Image 1 (tube, helix red, strand yellow):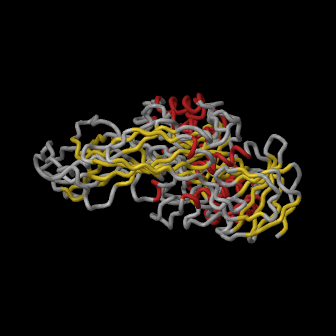
Image 2 (spheres, rainbow, N blue to C red):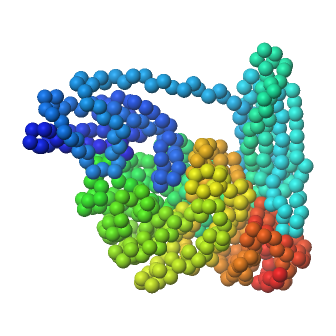
Image 3 (cartoon, one colour):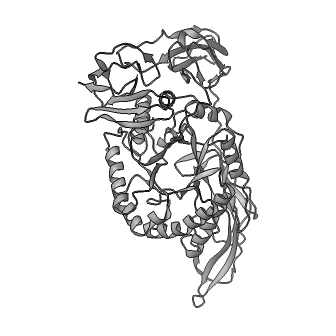
Length: 611
């Protein structure tokens, strides 16, 4: 049960078809049993708002015993209409036992070798990186290999990689240090520890099986700092605490976000957590989340969560209660949360009705929220994709009168880059629809978008390099869309290691080891901290070049191609060219080799491009 439930089931009898109400109380599945239930099963994860990943919050399935009239024939049991109530099994029997049989547990996994970075997830070029290694006793030999990764080839075709550092020893390594030799260039320092397992009969003999590799990474970033002033356009979906919303502040993740140039964070506020029973308000968790964000200078983009268990979903009373929940949040965090999004992806399974009902609910929420926090921006409908037919129907039912910004989630489900999947055209068509229906003055927000680095789920995954290129090309393309205020990537960190696409959306892994996309993000926000779009120099079909002012008087042109290599001539010659991994080069670059990996060209004057 999500949010807890106290209500009635209707039990139909054979005596003329009459029904009687039976009182039932069920505990929220994230809490300890409150109503005498027995625990059938526990897990450490649950679906995380907005439902696209897992968060490490303990949950359980409960068994509740309800007394019925055993002398009466039962012909039907009707559950309340509540989409947060989940009944997985029901047994009718006299004197049902309260003690459950023991469920056999699988044996615990053998602990394996682990590698950890003692320093944060980034270092400056020429810096020192310290590692700790945990090697169980059954492993008798270890070695490690470190290799710096940069954009290969770079804008001038050069690799520029230092020699890998390799060490092999017959004894387990528990700590080692990599010095300036392998952190010379910006990019990603990938380190692999290889361990060999000893034979149980003869410890000095190695097994015939393959060795075990354990990997981690560190970003090598020039001018890395966590207080650089960047635009709030660069946002992320991310948890700010460890182990769920009640955990400790995730200081390392927050610092990495800020080093990456992220200034906005999308947080979900779950009605079932805040008001578990009617009138029983508990703001402990959202108070803490908002305080953590404020302490670190992160702008909060708040998401009003889903139905609570006790509210009558999809009814006039349910909509009224939901509007009151939204109003209380907006009032409580006025001036601290200035963006609010109403529901999540109502065009798919998160919303069990159509655009008409969603528009009706929004018509109650919007005035309540604006009265409580007049200066905030209310965003809707936060659709999965950009379903113009659904949005147009919702517009017909009046949603443009009850929002300040139109929010969408234009996912690229097949690993295609933005230009290949017509992202610019999609945004143009959405703006045209808004203008045609009287919403030309409304802003746009992209509150979810991503590329995942694992070939599973709804479409093929991408390599880390492709994710890095896709992230930069998406943000740069979004910066050119008129009226688009924010892009919040989904998400900053991978929530787990499972073979499921949503465990591989992040720019850092679950241990906060950076992927190449983190380095690309930091490169982009360092060179374009407060970008002002000045126009397209080239807009396809093969070469794309967007010109910006960087906020401090420099002209920065971002240049890439569509899965091809092109040689172009630039006039005047740029002062510098920085690749996707942050490696900068100077020279006349005539001609310059352009690839699908964006390059950043700095110049004092506008560039002209010729092939």
